[in-house]
Length: 112
Image (tube, rainbow, N blue to C red; front, side, top):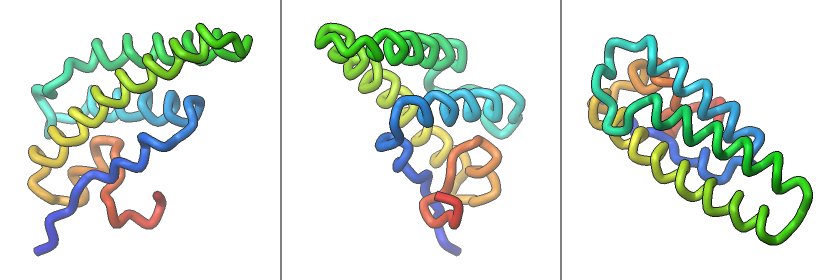
């Protein structure tokens, strides 16, 4: 049996796509009984996504301070979602359908 892993390519998404993807994961995880106790509380992830969106909208002004803030916020939320991805991977025990049910994509998914 192949042990599927969670694809981490979401780290390279541009901020607008990342914001949408992260919100989708939060929705999927919040109604998923396969993942009862995520390592990172979903409310903390939602707060982080809101902060990323605010930083992105403010960075559209192109000031170096706002761009730096966006970069820091993006790195911070990416780390939290990587932690969540590892939790999903471990909890799913390599089962592709369970990984997909979390909102994440398995590494071998054709829709990456």
